[in-house]
Image (cartoon, rainbow, N blue to C red):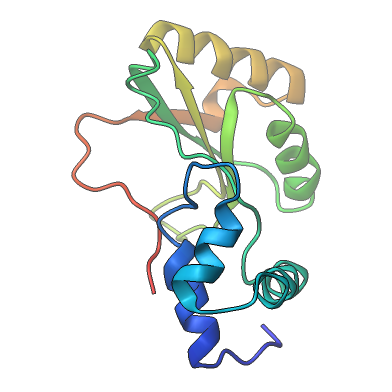
Length: 159
């Protein structure tokens, strides 16, 4: 990151890290709470966005309350030469919420590409996984799925 954060920047980030107020003019309220001019706040938020300090404003949904009862972390053993290509293709599936490249652990763990899939049931997750594998050309012995049993903690990073 090539942006040095000052005390005011930290105050702004702390103010928005739990979400923005659900009202007609949320940034005016944030500026008021911080004792800042609205335009100064918006300029700083734009700079945070441009520098990658924040990537977006969005809603965080509780997928279980929406009916998504199964979630699978799918692990893929993809050749290092094709991992970028396959990662991009897997990321294009709307059912995939996260997709990451991670290092292998020689002799212990051969998988290097991971993605998360949420669905109504385990069977539906499996169908999605097979559809992805078929479309990107990965054989069944080159992937596996791990299902969540219990959530102990789920929240975003905080300053």
